[in-house]
Image 1 (spheres, one colour):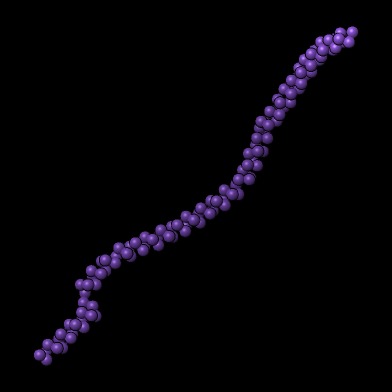
Image 2 (cartoon, helix red, strand yellow):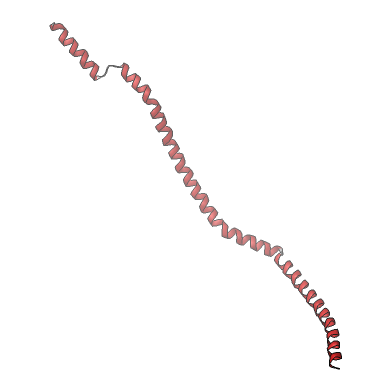
Length: 120
């Protein structure tokens, strides 16, 4: 008799588990569907987009201002560099021009030669 009761309970249990399993699957399916609908609701998507923009806008603006300042500094340094290069390129031309002109040293020698020559 005890074995018959266990067998009857075991036979009844799979039916209960099957019914419970179907109910659980149905409930989980509805919950999953509701969560999916809620997560993909257009107004919620707009809210998430707004939050993303609100959080990322300030750093983007700060980065843009920083880049503008750096660009301005770079322009100034490029101008200085171009000016220095032009000055360095002009040095050989000035040297050749200054060598052709009589300077104070060559003028002194010229005057000394002129003063000494009449006395000879």
